[in-house]
Length: 355
Image (cartoon, rainbow, N blue to C red; front, side, top):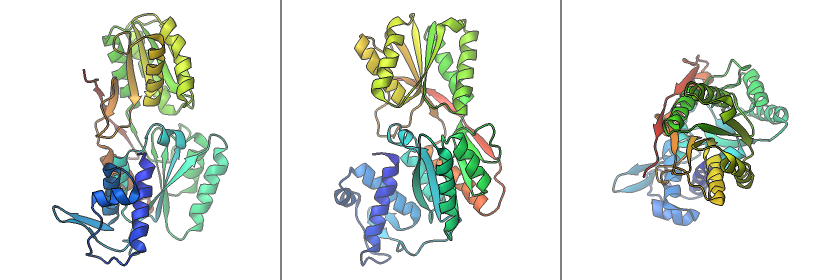
């Protein structure tokens, strides 16, 4: 279940409440009933109900059930009528970049705000961003933006609009006016690069997404610094920028694995790249942890997901807390208050695979 889906499911339940004769205080669907109505898992239904709790539409009482708290049209006062989540569809659909926890935190901080996903196109970011701003300015209520790995044109145009916005990820160097929150990319490069050296790797291949962001260069620079300090020569370091396509990743990584000098270490920016690398290993009869080492920077997983079979950089700040923090930054701007601090680096820790 992708992150945008829980918002859609919550919207469906809210529409159902709006069209019913339910009143505040009336009992509402249990998690099992909601799952049956929506034809989804109980976990997805539970998260959709949690979104409604954050919006103040329903309340839950332990051992008693779920009850209507207010009707959807009785919207509580909010600094922002709508929050646009601007993200490339690949990051959301294939990587789960906006976790359920982050959505819950954001909705909890801005209970009266509608969350709307807007997918950035692969090209012509100018037209896309200008259309977003024009639509936002046509409405009566205040609107804000959360920009996730947004390209330069999108960050620049939304920054110049003066509307509330927060960058979740790395800020483009030429855009100075937007507040941002990101994991510590330098720490990620240092932790994962050091782990590869500790595993004895004497050659490193770094796999990045095709569209590089400023944070990628920070991470890459730190990996190169750690590798150089560990005695790895430039000729023993290679880099690939690959599309979000498993087949393309698999066939691009296959010769790297076959021709690489042992012991070989693979740094993967995303778990999609890691999955492609592991499939390439299967084709070559090579196994991570035995024939090559694998580390991953960006892993967006739910608590119910099985642990990945590789070392990765884990944020030490809970996703729901991050959502609350982004919501507060948006609300401060909507009220005309300065955002202090204007940026925040989230620490990470090395998570080792379970054996």
